[in-house]
Picture 1 (cartoon, rainbow, N blue to C red):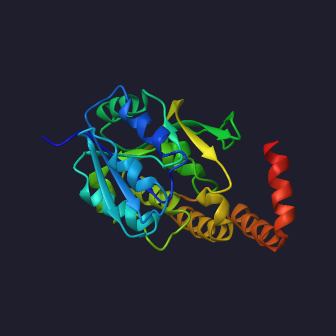
Picture 2 (cartoon, helix red, strand yellow):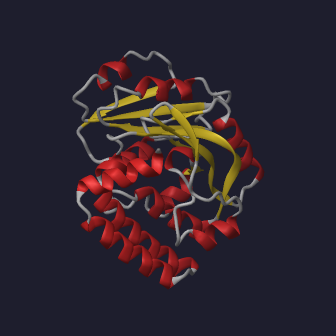
Length: 264
């Protein structure tokens, strides 16, 4: 009998935090899941760490580096669960995460996407999420053209709906999650649980830090799509575009200084 949930993780050179990530799933209070771990061409100790796990729920796939969206599409194609849970390899989930989200989906068949609150981990300090928290479907659709209301390492979604909308758009290298939420919400409702379910690590090697230019461009494209589908404020989108142009023009040292001031 297929598992209720498939947890899908793609990892590239993630040895520093991988064990904490994997163990956080294996220690979930909800146990009816399979765990698909895609080693995306790692050259560090990631393959050995993954191969050392003997838990029968784990399926390790070693492959060339396909990039995040293509790798995740492959992993979800391999998945058997009705529900897909995502987690990035440098983050970790709290023990009751899967149980809470499965319970929500069982009670809300019209919902296709479920997230929750999260915390950030920066240089050993746990910080609250700084993006506004929006819980209900109507509010999520109203603000999704302004910002991404779902963290990738927090979400669970229905696999069948994911396949119906065509999966991750592989042309969106930096906002493949955000862009997917827009299309999923066209098919059904979304919700954020009003409790912390995952911790997201911020560090210099995280993909959001390394691809800031691409992140800005893909975010602009995603917000434009969201505004066309759910409405929004064109002036706000124009401001995001102009502000992004200014930030991209700043020297790297100034951007690093501003970032350090924000997080200090």
